[in-house]
Image (cartoon, rainbow, N blue to C red):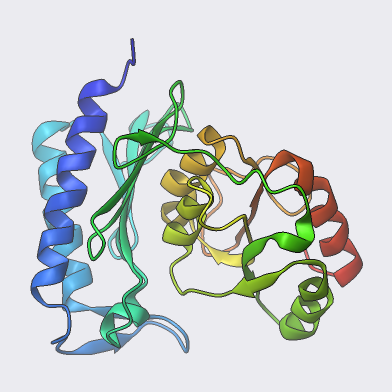
Length: 268
């Protein structure tokens, strides 16, 4: 029996509710605020996060919340909550604000510093990715499995090598795979590895805990090997800021991807 059945059902309802809210304003976004040169936030980010946080506090008042816009509320530490929710209320805000149809809601529950359930919801397509730490990954209720392609050269990869020299490093990796894409929503692309839609996901930096908590678990429970760029644990519960890096790939290709990253000089 799944220990987190009630929490998973709650998170699914919550992601769907946030998705409905997001779609109400899709295509007619108002004021856009720039958080950084590359990152923006809209009023819908705040409204979606407020909806999610309010319902979590009402249903699980003892739990903490780590959310993209509001930051941490009682997460970890001697006076913090042992259980907390990692929330990205709208991952892919730049896409959303520009009418590009690729964004999602991401919700994960972290218990004793480990993600134990993850939900990623694509409201435009109605696609719902879910997983628990002791159960399978699912897409719309059906079992989801990572890619089984035999050759890395046949793989379609979500690839984002950030920082100085990033494009040149991507060019070193590109000839070894079939094609690469940078979609603008890390959570949705990483979750897509769990359904074999992307064969692999590679990103160095630019990732925070709310970006990967749900999607990393989904990819892992689908059978993909998920690590950081040094081959170590992908999940770093106390790593603050957009500094995490993740590889998710079928086991047969993971070591080769690590080698390519080392040869390309990608920082880990």
